[in-house]
Image 1 (tube, rainbow, N blue to C red):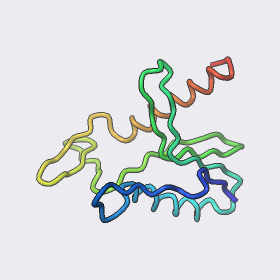
Image 2 (image 1 turned 60 degrees about the horizontal axis):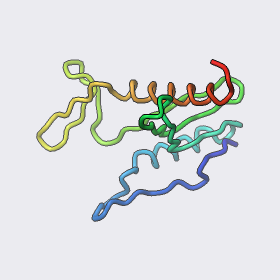
Image 3 (image 1 turned 45 degrees about the vertical axis):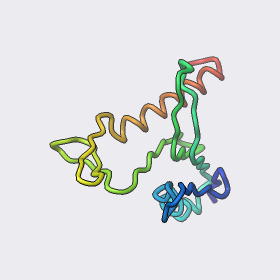
Length: 126
């Protein structure tokens, strides 16, 4: 059975909100729990990693670790976040289309880079 950290996820309720701000992550976690129920994997949710240059930090929504094959970072987006060939990654907020130049792939890759660099620095090798 996969082991999840934290064992019970926190719900983030902004003032006056009708639903948790992290609802997409909570829904995705339930899917992971069901899909990984018969694996010896480790899943860490909302892992904050210090940037290697010590300027800023990155949050990894889900770090899934398979002891035999390695790890993968999963970035969860909710709402109407989408890929449109003409715009790239974007989301509609009201009447405005907000373009995300980096995109979800870059966000996950950058977070993984920071984690690997941090771990490598602690283990004293690249």
